[in-house]
Image (cartoon, rainbow, N blue to C red; front, side, top):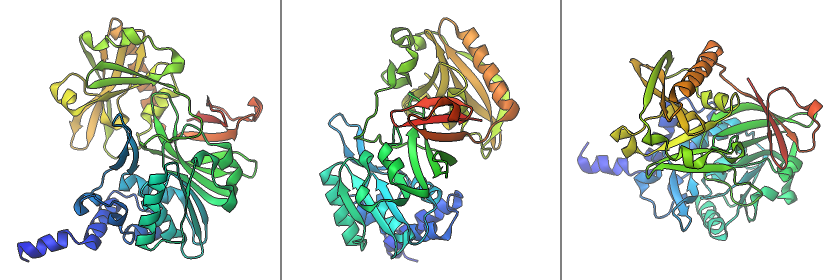
Length: 406
């Protein structure tokens, strides 16, 4: 094969599409032939005009719209996350589907492929320019039967209800009452919902029960651009520790922001726990376990440069998870232990480092004793009485009462 031939193959959309699908397949994300086939069919580049062809098929997020302050307002999500959500949604031929967050229109096209010619997909986007862009791309790619609506996704779209499936493709704060009302009996909603003020989010696949509550069958680690519209309280305290490190926690716990802002001026104290985890163990929910087990949970956001310089190096696997108390911070770190395993450690900064380290180590040992792999998450409508709720930590939202247990 000549260099010119290799280049032409590398820039062939079908070849790039199959290469991306092969990568997702290698990660074990595809569980059904229907979702895999959709990924090998939908022309991703049509939905990303102006994006380099090779870039359009990279296994990463592509930001497509930013706010004036530079924060992302819309994006094409990581293809692997999109595939995982599509599998969790469990779409069947002929289903009627509501998507909240059209963005580029890629996801609506995938859903249209899976539900087939006898199904129906309605997708809602809050911005007119994004709605127009998604509509144009869907038409160009041959998905003219998808209905695009410009509006607040929190209100759903009653005209086409009930929906067998509802999928939310932006980070949500609540399960809006409209989604509850518009979900068909025995329907499923897949929603990335923020479960803690630190920004900790899980994509939940929730099934509507005959008794009216929603029960999660899947909880997937994820990150999404926050949903705009609806009602979402500002519950995150973002505390700059340096110009490249931010501590995020819940405002409801009244953190001592001035004291926490000074934590990294104190020397680091490191303690290795002797707890080892392999790369393939189902331990991804350790951070959520901590957040639902104790007070003072926080997440440390650290730039690559700050990590490289050694200022802070929290474990990537748990998104900077740690605890704080007063002006002291302790976070989870990890170091290589073997070819496919790492040892968990704790790094603490602040005037009470030894005590907070001991507390976090005790919690980690308690977690290690049982290593709960999957949270049990149930959602009830707001107004449900306490005696109807199951055991667990309760999370109150305007339209929903969530419980999480292990």
